Image (tube, rainbow, N blue to C red):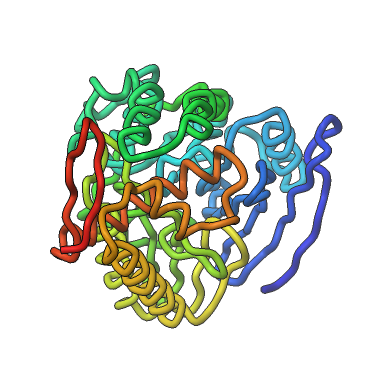
Length: 359
């Protein structure tokens, strides 16, 4: 690390963005967001001509708009200096502000075709696309129009109580303002390196946390910009959602193994601080999920349980909000689907609902 400083992002904003300059021409911007994460890392890479690429600008809100206005002023940049925005995946805290920044600057917004399909699943088709639809793996337009209604019913069929399910729809709708306006998207050519910051970066596509997630690797320096594919201290959520990837944990573990095969000198994640020891962290995450799979399998040895019943044991008192329950339930379902795939469990349909039993 070379230097770090804080400043207030705009007169009306009470949130602060921390700017940290790293070697190899990477500027880390800690963009404020709601709890529990509280901030998301955006990165700015500069080209020799003074134009920049922004990676994962954060969710849209008045605070983050003012934050970016302050950042541009602090760095003596205009809207015209923004060449590209790279979005590692479709989640609002990474994708959300990209459309607003594009509307101000006219820059291109880049993401994978698969990630864009997932954005459609969550928020519909109310945005542009200059490369065609290209939805994959069941992330279709029909589901995108009513995912807010589908998910609560899906959870109920897996045993969720009304106490929790009644809040899911409003929770999902609360993200709409964080992703509007949605951008006109350009798709990566995943077979070609992506140029930014005076370097060519290899694109590594993984799933699990988010279908079509892209990490960017620079072999000569060993730098890895990994979004939420690998995080320090916290485990990336792995969610099973109707209409999306039916085997997200399998994809996540495959992606970890692929990412762990690269020699990484420093990783730049979507949350917490950049870190060394990338291979060790990958191995820790792999072990964590194997342990959770064993715990879930053990719960099923005494007879069939709903996913919600398993979720209550796996996450215990750590779930206190609808937001946390949505992710805990989806992650539980991802683990149970992986147990079924490995033939360590079976899924039973009973009275219109579903139960899981040991195989």
